[in-house]
Length: 176
Image (cartoon, rainbow, N blue to C red; front, side, top):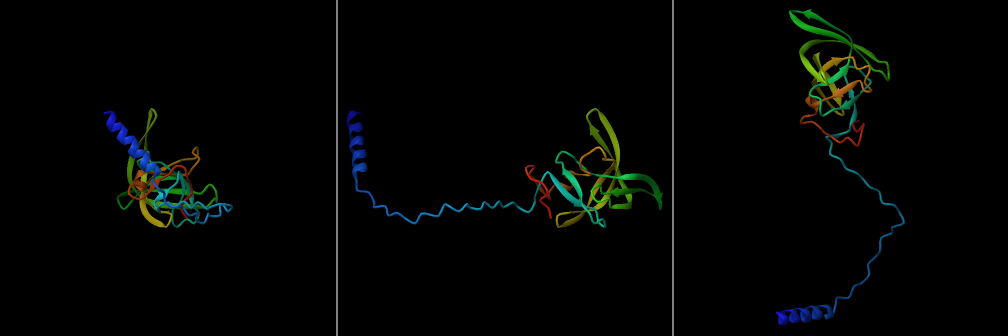
């Protein structure tokens, strides 16, 4: 065993004493100028709060992106149900809090959903709305709710996010 250790020591010493390659100094980069850090995000990454549009309205609504919500929601006023040609319809008004732009809508009632909150259950009307997020315009289901007590007039849930976007809560307002 001692002979093996002695051989290993001799081998290591011989390797350390072997002539090394000559190192030629290269050009040292100028570190006086700060380097620019460019963060590249995929196109489908959105933030915790984004702007959404409801055509033909011109001004956007700020919406909280909520991966815990099944269905999206919008702040609607003067919600009234009525019947047209034997079908259930609903009329309502969207008012943008920031710009005061106001628009009346009439839509077929899509369905009623049960919203579960801590200790409470609430039934809400849903309608299919044209919505624009970023450069994409599509139809999505929204519950109509008075959101006066909420900071954001809209809530974007999984019915819009699934297969469309990834949420990075450390950023906001990424969509143009």
